[in-house]
Figure (cartoon, rainbow, N blue to C red):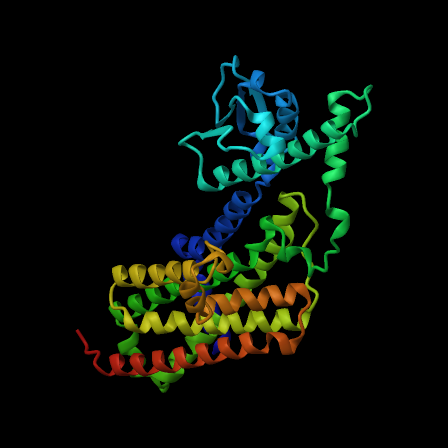
Length: 388
């Protein structure tokens, strides 16, 4: 009977383009779009921005400052250039004295274009601060005679850059690269997001079966409504597992291929399998809970789709949890989507089963409680159904 139920639900979904879109096209599109949106590195972002340097005549180190700023990837132009400007650096009189003797302030005036995002503005500000720090070292070395008389400006800048380098002091002990790569970090999140959208096809199916009399006819069959409900949940669980496999292939193989990065490996395959099962179980439980509560298509779309989007936002899928306000970050730790994304990352990064046990247990309890409540609501509503 389970095989027939799976076949029936698969046929219904395949005949409904909206369901196919929700289960496959929507999550894959989200995954690809967000991956490309996050793939812009700071160096690439800087190369798209132009900074005008004004007032070089007020400083003997104006040309050096231009070199240090352009070293961050920005295009630096002179005050005579006619082009679209993202930021303007104006050197005021007395800059050189202030640079060496720390006398006075406000000798550099920075103007940022209104069109810039806060992230781009921060990038420019921090890059200019680093450039000024290098220029200060440049000025000290020049004042102390550390530069040879025959050195060109580019050679001096190279020497300062080498002197200011501190990478050799740091030893990085990092987990798997996926946890630090902006282009791939969100892949597990959008896989989970897609799985949880099973709520819409399930809700629509239950509403259709209620309206066309299927649920009433079930009463005449030698099967309880609880058995019918459980079989339907199992059939959708199988379909969700197929969806999970499809999204795994896209997220772990296709997305890295498109973005020119190494394929994502799974360091703990047993944990990844358990994570997939628990994510599907919790998503199915949540979906049937919502489906048992709604009575119209509008309610299914608003509650099912709306709650999914809110949970995704709260779970750190759109804004990373570590930069959320503490109150929201604490609230995110109670979200099943957060547990789902976290345990998938743990499996990819090679965490142990013990490390992932907390998330797996939380997902299991959430799915079980949700399905139990959904079954109670479904049975109560089924008893109230009458022949038309």
